[in-house]
Image (cartoon, rainbow, N blue to C red):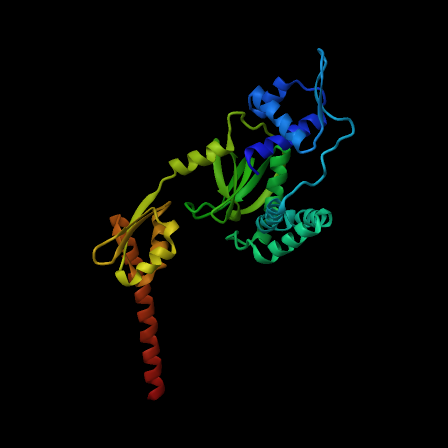
Length: 332
Protein backbone atom coordinates (compact mmCIF):
# COMPACT_ATOMS: atom_id res chain seq x y z
CA UNK A 1 0.00 0.00 0.00
CA UNK A 2 1.48 3.38 -0.97
CA UNK A 3 1.81 6.29 1.47
CA UNK A 4 -1.29 8.12 0.23
CA UNK A 5 -3.48 5.05 0.59
CA UNK A 6 -2.07 4.35 4.05
CA UNK A 7 -2.76 7.91 5.17
CA UNK A 8 -6.29 7.85 3.77
CA UNK A 9 -7.12 4.74 5.79
CA UNK A 10 -5.43 6.24 8.85
CA UNK A 11 -7.48 9.42 8.39
CA UNK A 12 -10.71 7.42 8.30
CA UNK A 13 -9.81 5.63 11.52
CA UNK A 14 -8.82 8.90 13.21
CA UNK A 15 -12.20 10.44 12.39
CA UNK A 16 -14.04 7.26 13.30
CA UNK A 17 -12.40 7.05 16.73
CA UNK A 18 -12.65 10.77 17.53
CA UNK A 19 -15.07 13.11 15.70
CA UNK A 20 -14.80 16.92 15.46
CA UNK A 21 -11.05 17.07 14.88
CA UNK A 22 -9.34 20.17 13.59
CA UNK A 23 -7.71 19.92 10.19
CA UNK A 24 -4.45 21.21 11.67
CA UNK A 25 -4.47 18.43 14.30
CA UNK A 26 -5.11 15.81 11.64
CA UNK A 27 -2.26 17.22 9.55
CA UNK A 28 0.13 16.86 12.50
CA UNK A 29 -0.97 13.30 13.19
CA UNK A 30 -0.54 12.31 9.55
CA UNK A 31 2.69 14.24 9.10
CA UNK A 32 1.40 16.22 6.09
CA UNK A 33 0.49 19.82 5.30
CA UNK A 34 -2.90 21.42 5.95
CA UNK A 35 -3.44 21.66 2.21
CA UNK A 36 -2.81 17.93 1.81
CA UNK A 37 -5.41 17.11 4.49
CA UNK A 38 -8.05 19.07 2.59
CA UNK A 39 -7.06 17.23 -0.58
CA UNK A 40 -7.52 13.94 1.31
CA UNK A 41 -11.03 15.09 2.30
CA UNK A 42 -11.84 15.59 -1.39
CA UNK A 43 -10.45 12.16 -2.28
CA UNK A 44 -12.55 10.47 0.42
CA UNK A 45 -15.63 12.31 -0.78
CA UNK A 46 -15.02 11.01 -4.32
CA UNK A 47 -14.72 7.50 -2.84
CA UNK A 48 -18.17 7.87 -1.26
CA UNK A 49 -16.92 8.18 2.33
CA UNK A 50 -19.02 10.99 3.90
CA UNK A 51 -17.18 13.70 5.83
CA UNK A 52 -18.69 16.92 7.13
CA UNK A 53 -17.41 19.96 9.02
CA UNK A 54 -18.92 21.82 11.97
CA UNK A 55 -17.98 25.44 12.59
CA UNK A 56 -17.28 26.99 15.96
CA UNK A 57 -14.72 26.59 18.77
CA UNK A 58 -15.79 22.99 19.39
CA UNK A 59 -16.31 22.09 15.76
CA UNK A 60 -14.12 20.18 13.36
CA UNK A 61 -14.23 17.42 10.79
CA UNK A 62 -16.17 14.20 11.38
CA UNK A 63 -17.53 11.17 9.58
CA UNK A 64 -21.29 11.23 8.99
CA UNK A 65 -22.98 9.78 12.05
CA UNK A 66 -23.34 6.01 11.84
CA UNK A 67 -20.64 5.49 9.20
CA UNK A 68 -18.19 2.74 10.02
CA UNK A 69 -15.15 1.53 8.15
CA UNK A 70 -15.83 -1.88 6.58
CA UNK A 71 -14.16 -4.60 8.67
CA UNK A 72 -12.04 -5.92 5.80
CA UNK A 73 -10.88 -3.78 2.90
CA UNK A 74 -8.18 -5.79 1.09
CA UNK A 75 -7.22 -6.11 -2.54
CA UNK A 76 -5.88 -9.42 -3.86
CA UNK A 77 -2.23 -8.65 -3.12
CA UNK A 78 -3.00 -7.44 0.41
CA UNK A 79 -4.96 -10.60 1.18
CA UNK A 80 -2.09 -12.74 -0.10
CA UNK A 81 0.42 -10.70 1.92
CA UNK A 82 -1.52 -11.45 5.12
CA UNK A 83 -1.64 -15.15 4.28
CA UNK A 84 2.09 -15.24 3.54
CA UNK A 85 2.69 -13.43 6.82
CA UNK A 86 0.84 -16.10 8.80
CA UNK A 87 2.97 -18.72 7.08
CA UNK A 88 6.18 -16.96 8.12
CA UNK A 89 4.90 -16.67 11.71
CA UNK A 90 4.25 -20.41 11.87
CA UNK A 91 7.63 -21.19 10.35
CA UNK A 92 9.63 -18.90 12.62
CA UNK A 93 7.84 -19.38 15.94
CA UNK A 94 6.68 -22.99 15.73
CA UNK A 95 4.14 -23.96 18.39
CA UNK A 96 4.23 -20.57 20.09
CA UNK A 97 2.18 -18.88 17.38
CA UNK A 98 1.10 -21.76 15.13
CA UNK A 99 -2.41 -22.02 16.56
CA UNK A 100 -2.87 -18.24 16.53
CA UNK A 101 -1.68 -18.01 12.92
CA UNK A 102 -4.01 -20.81 11.84
CA UNK A 103 -6.94 -19.17 13.67
CA UNK A 104 -6.27 -15.81 12.05
CA UNK A 105 -6.04 -17.45 8.64
CA UNK A 106 -9.32 -19.32 9.15
CA UNK A 107 -11.13 -16.10 10.12
CA UNK A 108 -9.68 -14.31 7.13
CA UNK A 109 -10.75 -16.99 4.68
CA UNK A 110 -14.29 -17.05 6.10
CA UNK A 111 -14.73 -13.30 5.65
CA UNK A 112 -13.02 -12.75 2.29
CA UNK A 113 -14.99 -12.51 -0.97
CA UNK A 114 -14.83 -15.54 -3.29
CA UNK A 115 -12.24 -13.98 -5.62
CA UNK A 116 -9.84 -13.21 -2.78
CA UNK A 117 -10.45 -16.61 -1.19
CA UNK A 118 -9.40 -18.29 -4.45
CA UNK A 119 -6.29 -16.10 -4.58
CA UNK A 120 -5.46 -17.04 -0.98
CA UNK A 121 -5.88 -20.75 -1.75
CA UNK A 122 -3.52 -20.40 -4.69
CA UNK A 123 -0.94 -18.55 -2.56
CA UNK A 124 -0.98 -21.22 0.15
CA UNK A 125 -0.15 -23.89 -2.44
CA UNK A 126 2.29 -21.94 -4.58
CA UNK A 127 4.13 -19.37 -2.38
CA UNK A 128 5.71 -21.22 0.54
CA UNK A 129 8.39 -20.16 3.02
CA UNK A 130 10.28 -22.94 4.80
CA UNK A 131 13.66 -23.85 6.25
CA UNK A 132 14.18 -20.47 7.91
CA UNK A 133 15.38 -21.93 11.22
CA UNK A 134 18.84 -23.51 11.23
CA UNK A 135 18.22 -25.15 14.61
CA UNK A 136 15.28 -27.37 15.57
CA UNK A 137 12.53 -24.90 16.44
CA UNK A 138 10.59 -27.47 18.46
CA UNK A 139 13.44 -28.00 20.92
CA UNK A 140 13.80 -24.22 21.31
CA UNK A 141 10.09 -23.57 21.91
CA UNK A 142 10.20 -23.85 25.74
CA UNK A 143 13.14 -21.44 25.91
CA UNK A 144 11.55 -19.01 23.46
CA UNK A 145 8.31 -19.10 25.47
CA UNK A 146 10.09 -18.23 28.74
CA UNK A 147 12.14 -15.50 27.08
CA UNK A 148 9.08 -14.06 25.36
CA UNK A 149 7.23 -13.97 28.67
CA UNK A 150 10.21 -12.40 30.44
CA UNK A 151 10.44 -9.67 27.81
CA UNK A 152 6.70 -8.99 28.00
CA UNK A 153 6.64 -8.89 31.81
CA UNK A 154 10.03 -7.18 32.19
CA UNK A 155 11.41 -9.97 34.38
CA UNK A 156 15.01 -11.08 34.68
CA UNK A 157 16.09 -14.61 33.82
CA UNK A 158 18.89 -16.92 34.85
CA UNK A 159 20.38 -19.11 32.13
CA UNK A 160 23.15 -21.56 31.39
CA UNK A 161 24.94 -20.37 28.27
CA UNK A 162 27.55 -22.20 26.17
CA UNK A 163 29.71 -19.62 24.44
CA UNK A 164 31.76 -20.74 21.45
CA UNK A 165 34.78 -19.14 23.13
CA UNK A 166 34.61 -21.12 26.41
CA UNK A 167 34.86 -24.90 26.96
CA UNK A 168 32.06 -25.08 29.55
CA UNK A 169 28.65 -23.42 30.03
CA UNK A 170 28.46 -20.40 32.31
CA UNK A 171 25.65 -19.13 34.52
CA UNK A 172 24.32 -15.76 33.35
CA UNK A 173 21.79 -13.30 34.71
CA UNK A 174 19.99 -11.44 31.96
CA UNK A 175 17.40 -8.68 31.58
CA UNK A 176 15.97 -9.69 28.19
CA UNK A 177 14.99 -6.82 25.87
CA UNK A 178 14.11 -8.51 22.58
CA UNK A 179 14.07 -11.73 20.56
CA UNK A 180 15.59 -11.43 17.09
CA UNK A 181 15.69 -13.91 14.22
CA UNK A 182 18.49 -13.46 11.69
CA UNK A 183 20.78 -15.65 9.60
CA UNK A 184 18.57 -18.63 10.46
CA UNK A 185 19.18 -18.40 14.22
CA UNK A 186 17.17 -17.04 17.16
CA UNK A 187 18.95 -14.52 19.42
CA UNK A 188 17.96 -12.88 22.70
CA UNK A 189 19.31 -9.39 23.33
CA UNK A 190 19.46 -7.95 26.82
CA UNK A 191 21.50 -6.56 29.67
CA UNK A 192 24.00 -9.17 30.86
CA UNK A 193 24.64 -9.09 34.61
CA UNK A 194 28.07 -10.68 34.15
CA UNK A 195 29.38 -8.23 31.54
CA UNK A 196 27.34 -5.26 32.79
CA UNK A 197 26.37 -4.31 29.25
CA UNK A 198 23.87 -5.16 26.55
CA UNK A 199 24.86 -8.42 24.85
CA UNK A 200 23.48 -10.85 22.26
CA UNK A 201 23.03 -14.59 22.97
CA UNK A 202 22.10 -17.38 20.56
CA UNK A 203 19.06 -19.19 21.94
CA UNK A 204 20.14 -22.67 20.79
CA UNK A 205 23.26 -22.30 22.97
CA UNK A 206 21.13 -21.76 26.08
CA UNK A 207 20.72 -25.07 27.89
CA UNK A 208 18.38 -23.87 30.64
CA UNK A 209 16.31 -20.74 31.33
CA UNK A 210 14.74 -19.85 34.69
CA UNK A 211 12.21 -17.02 34.90
CA UNK A 212 12.94 -14.93 38.02
CA UNK A 213 10.63 -12.78 40.12
CA UNK A 214 13.04 -9.86 39.84
CA UNK A 215 11.65 -7.02 37.73
CA UNK A 216 13.86 -4.77 35.64
CA UNK A 217 13.50 -1.45 33.86
CA UNK A 218 14.83 -1.23 30.34
CA UNK A 219 17.10 1.71 29.66
CA UNK A 220 15.17 4.40 27.76
CA UNK A 221 18.32 4.99 25.71
CA UNK A 222 18.21 1.50 24.25
CA UNK A 223 16.97 1.31 20.65
CA UNK A 224 16.80 -2.15 19.13
CA UNK A 225 17.25 -1.11 15.49
CA UNK A 226 20.22 1.10 16.32
CA UNK A 227 21.78 -1.67 18.42
CA UNK A 228 21.47 -4.22 15.62
CA UNK A 229 22.95 -1.81 13.11
CA UNK A 230 25.86 -0.89 15.37
CA UNK A 231 26.49 -4.53 16.23
CA UNK A 232 26.90 -5.43 12.56
CA UNK A 233 29.15 -2.46 11.89
CA UNK A 234 31.42 -3.02 14.91
CA UNK A 235 31.55 -6.81 14.72
CA UNK A 236 35.05 -8.10 14.03
CA UNK A 237 35.13 -9.47 10.51
CA UNK A 238 37.67 -11.30 8.42
CA UNK A 239 37.60 -10.56 4.71
CA UNK A 240 38.58 -13.69 2.81
CA UNK A 241 39.74 -13.62 -0.81
CA UNK A 242 39.28 -16.78 -2.86
CA UNK A 243 40.08 -17.80 -6.43
CA UNK A 244 37.74 -20.08 -8.35
CA UNK A 245 39.27 -21.95 -11.30
CA UNK A 246 37.71 -21.09 -14.66
CA UNK A 247 36.05 -24.53 -14.82
CA UNK A 248 34.10 -23.68 -11.66
CA UNK A 249 33.21 -20.06 -12.41
CA UNK A 250 29.55 -21.07 -12.52
CA UNK A 251 29.67 -21.66 -8.75
CA UNK A 252 30.28 -17.96 -8.24
CA UNK A 253 27.30 -17.00 -10.36
CA UNK A 254 25.11 -19.43 -8.45
CA UNK A 255 25.88 -17.63 -5.16
CA UNK A 256 26.44 -14.10 -6.41
CA UNK A 257 24.63 -12.38 -3.55
CA UNK A 258 26.94 -14.07 -1.03
CA UNK A 259 30.11 -12.35 -2.23
CA UNK A 260 31.28 -8.90 -1.24
CA UNK A 261 33.14 -8.47 -4.52
CA UNK A 262 33.55 -10.49 -7.72
CA UNK A 263 36.33 -10.03 -10.27
CA UNK A 264 36.73 -12.12 -13.44
CA UNK A 265 40.34 -12.57 -14.56
CA UNK A 266 41.61 -12.80 -18.20
CA UNK A 267 42.22 -16.56 -17.84
CA UNK A 268 38.56 -17.13 -16.89
CA UNK A 269 39.19 -17.64 -13.17
CA UNK A 270 37.16 -15.59 -10.71
CA UNK A 271 38.37 -13.91 -7.53
CA UNK A 272 35.82 -13.17 -4.80
CA UNK A 273 35.82 -11.70 -1.33
CA UNK A 274 33.41 -12.34 1.53
CA UNK A 275 33.27 -11.22 5.18
CA UNK A 276 33.32 -13.76 8.00
CA UNK A 277 33.08 -13.33 11.79
CA UNK A 278 35.79 -15.96 12.46
CA UNK A 279 38.59 -17.83 10.71
CA UNK A 280 36.79 -21.11 11.39
CA UNK A 281 33.65 -19.88 9.64
CA UNK A 282 35.69 -18.71 6.65
CA UNK A 283 37.57 -22.02 6.51
CA UNK A 284 34.33 -24.02 6.59
CA UNK A 285 32.88 -21.92 3.77
CA UNK A 286 36.02 -22.36 1.71
CA UNK A 287 36.17 -26.13 2.15
CA UNK A 288 32.53 -26.43 1.07
CA UNK A 289 33.75 -25.73 -2.48
CA UNK A 290 36.41 -28.44 -2.37
CA UNK A 291 39.08 -28.34 -5.13
CA UNK A 292 37.22 -25.61 -7.01
CA UNK A 293 38.69 -22.87 -4.87
CA UNK A 294 42.00 -21.59 -3.45
CA UNK A 295 42.49 -19.16 -0.57
CA UNK A 296 44.48 -16.08 -1.56
CA UNK A 297 44.24 -14.18 1.72
CA UNK A 298 44.50 -13.67 4.61
CA UNK A 299 47.58 -15.87 5.20
CA UNK A 300 46.23 -17.29 8.46
CA UNK A 301 43.11 -18.51 6.67
CA UNK A 302 45.23 -20.12 3.96
CA UNK A 303 47.28 -21.92 6.63
CA UNK A 304 44.14 -23.08 8.49
CA UNK A 305 42.53 -24.49 5.36
CA UNK A 306 45.77 -26.26 4.40
CA UNK A 307 46.06 -27.75 7.91
CA UNK A 308 42.45 -28.95 7.89
CA UNK A 309 42.96 -30.57 4.49
CA UNK A 310 46.15 -32.25 5.71
CA UNK A 311 44.49 -33.67 8.83
CA UNK A 312 41.48 -34.88 6.85
CA UNK A 313 43.72 -36.50 4.22
CA UNK A 314 45.71 -38.34 6.91
CA UNK A 315 42.50 -39.79 8.33
CA UNK A 316 41.41 -41.11 4.96
CA UNK A 317 44.91 -42.47 4.27
CA UNK A 318 44.84 -44.33 7.59
CA UNK A 319 41.46 -45.84 6.70
CA UNK A 320 42.76 -46.83 3.26
CA UNK A 321 45.84 -48.44 4.80
CA UNK A 322 43.73 -50.38 7.29
CA UNK A 323 41.46 -51.57 4.49
CA UNK A 324 44.42 -52.78 2.39
CA UNK A 325 45.86 -54.73 5.35
CA UNK A 326 42.48 -56.30 6.06
CA UNK A 327 42.11 -57.46 2.46
CA UNK A 328 45.70 -58.84 2.50
CA UNK A 329 44.99 -60.91 5.61
CA UNK A 330 41.81 -62.26 4.05
CA UNK A 331 43.77 -63.42 0.98
CA UNK A 332 46.38 -65.10 3.17
